[in-house]
Image (cartoon, rainbow, N blue to C red; front, side, top):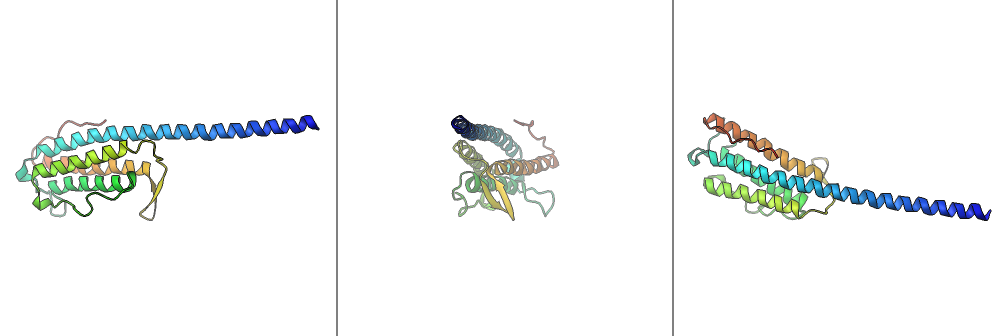
Length: 187
C-alpha cells in the first residue's frame, strides 16, 4: 500500500511538472511567435511606407485634387485617409493610447503635396515605432469591434489591408493621369 501511495505521488508530481513545462513552454513559444509577427509587420510597413511615398511623389501637386468620379476621394484625400487610419488603429489597438491626431486631423484643402507626404510619412513612422515597442505584448488580446471582437494580431492585418486597398486606388488615379506607378515593393 505504501509503494502504491508513493507511486501515485510520483505520478502526480510528474503530471504536474509536465503541465507546468507545457504551459510555460507554450507561453514562451507564443511570445516568440508574437515577436516574430510584430517584427515582420514593422518590416512590411517600412516597405509599404516607401511604396506609398513613391506613389505620392509621382503625381504633380496641381493634380492632387484629382478624383476619377465625384463620389471618390481625391488623390490627396486618399493619402490623408491612409495616414489617419494608420494613426487611429495603431494608437488605439496596438499601442493602447489616445490617438495623437484625434483633435488635430489634417484638412486636405489646406495642405500642400509636401505637407500631405510629411503627414503620411509620420503616420507610417508612428506605426512602425508603435509595433516595434510592442514586442513582448500578447497579440491575442481582444478588443470590441463592430459588434464582435478583434485581436491585436487582426488589427495588424487590418492596418496592412486598409492601406494597401487605398494605395491601390492611388495606382488607378496615376494611370488615369497617364503616369506609370512605381515598381511594386511587396516585402
